[in-house]
Image (tube, rainbow, N blue to C red; front, side):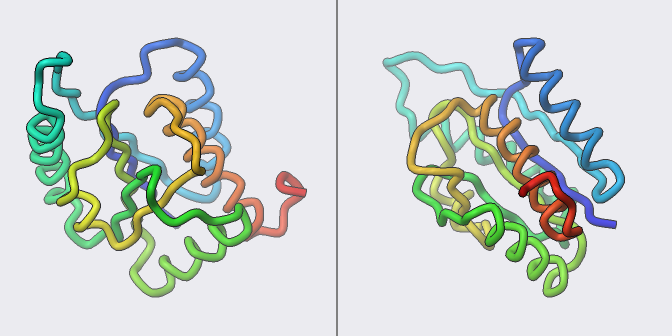
Length: 159
């Protein structure tokens, strides 16, 4: 069975995001185990250097990655590679055949990811050219993972 881990900075604060995420995790359960690893966001103000904040968050991400050393890592970033839903499903299938059944997705905080996190990833993935909140990214990623499973299984959800 597939195992998706999502390392994310921050919690889903509003109940509607938590409910949406829980729904897609429930839908994914027959196809993949989903683990959410929430890391504490670094507080910051306009006076703080964004690169220092991202470095502190990167240290937390790398510590979490050490606990799952053999997984394939995908970092989400607005400047990453974009895929259609069908192409993402095919990519996930190929990755699991080539690298094993465990994939880690990394979602940064409001300032994004440090360059060293993007470099560590085997793939930098963009969910589109628009900028969306990191809370919405988590729900969108879960929905796209569910859609990928439905495409792979030739189930009607996508069509």
